[in-house]
Image (cartoon, rainbow, N blue to C red; front, top):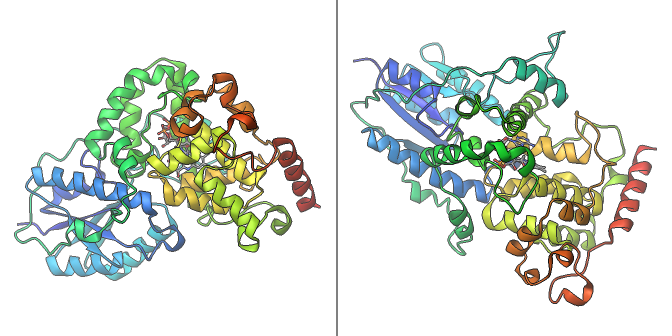
Length: 464
Ligand SMILES: Cc1cc2nc3c(=O)[nH]c(=O)nc-3n(C[C@H](O)[C@H](O)[C@H](O)COP(=O)(O)OP(=O)(O)OC[C@H]3O[C@@H](n4cnc5c(N)ncnc54)[C@H](O)[C@@H]3O)c2cc1C
């Protein structure tokens, strides 16, 4: 009998189009392993909402393996050490894994390769992006830094590779190694259980991802017009499924590629943003932590650690109590459901860094902790894009006006849903309620005009 093959699962929690599983299943009995390694990622260890998703996604995938007379071995601790020891224990010749581009995973892959020595191999596969990050380069062979030319080059190379079916056979080893019990990891909050809103909003796992994609296939034509309207359900909401690898972008692309609508063409470019973000963190591993522009950051940002009032401003933003209904609706949607509509993510991020002049990294960390799709690349790249601090275009002086945005994109229904204390206001008043009709809802934390002038002044000073 051939030797067991370990499949190291990370954010690739699916059975179909899973190249590592596919290769392992062809080579011998399969031992799928998930290692919870929270130390390694430092300040980007999974946040609270991510842990909730991870629990349900592992539970779902565990059932799928169970249906194939297989299982997932769960371990906790230093991933390379655990995997190398496991390979010794079961006599595995190869550990198969999909490549990941977060710096801590790249390091872990190097450490594992060293720990396995010459006898055993780490076999890495591409599978979570349309094209392998780093493979799309400019005429001079350099990776792209700017989205637009990257996107053009990507589109020329589409469609992506063909998708793989679920392996026909997944054979089991003679003996299963010990596994932790998922519930013992206590990934779900209990006291209090704040995850009810997340459970109500989402279905987790690979089958749910495909159900959502099936639904989206009929809706994608509306995306071009509808994607900016937070009151409507006209985006795919595939982000956590894609982030956790419950579905691959190649599967999404092939399912939609024959659509002829503007909606699909626009959607394709959004999926490419995801590849772009991985290309950025592949080149700049510290991107979600470091600014890339020359200016005096101490002059620009107000630091919440340096003053009680600034800290209070940050908390008002986090809790959805800024007095700007569309911002507060977004921040409350995030807290309740672990997700926020893209248009509102932009408005809220812009509000933090420009209206409140708070360093984007405080926002990046809050989104990191509260989003079920919190993604090192996507989150870092979008925060830097809004803040104008990254390697792409400088957006700082484009200050979004939350009240105008709210009206323009018809956010009344969205505000009613997430800021119920304003639910009785008319469409004409709900975007910017008069003080006399606010009741318990707070007054504006800062007036828009004043905030705009302060931001532009601070920006000028930081550059001089
Ligand atoms: C400040 C800020 C932080 C963000 N943080 C994250 C994050 O941590 N994780 C995350 O997945 N997305 C993030 N985004 C991007 C975007 O808001 C979400 O991907 C999108 O709202 C998810 O909803 P959807 O699946 O319905 O998207 P759709 O509009 O249906 O788009 C389809 C897919 O394309 C990808 N995508 C779309 N827009 C972007 C984008 N701007 N950048 C990268 N990929 C994109 C996502 O995988 C998404 O699922 C952030 C945006 C902003 C402005």
